[in-house]
Image (cartoon, rainbow, N blue to C red; front, side, top):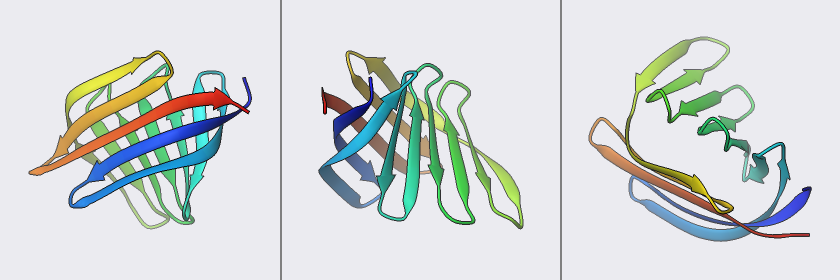
Length: 112
């Protein structure tokens, strides 16, 4: 595949968002630009990566860990994955960090 239309729905702490965006699907990885960050979702390994200028966050939903890196430090944060589905052009994850609950869903709508 190549360029695709994506539907994204996320609930991060108190912020809920729903929007359509264009992205790229290649080797079962979804890539798109979200405001000031590049998002890469590895659907084979259930990994979500968020890359900003000096920051990189890697959410490994198979191993229940988030690795946050900057030029000054690197820290591993345990996460509790409550649900992770990856099928039929859809990726959904519901996870918890400390007492905060997060949900992220992305649907691949169509190839452009």
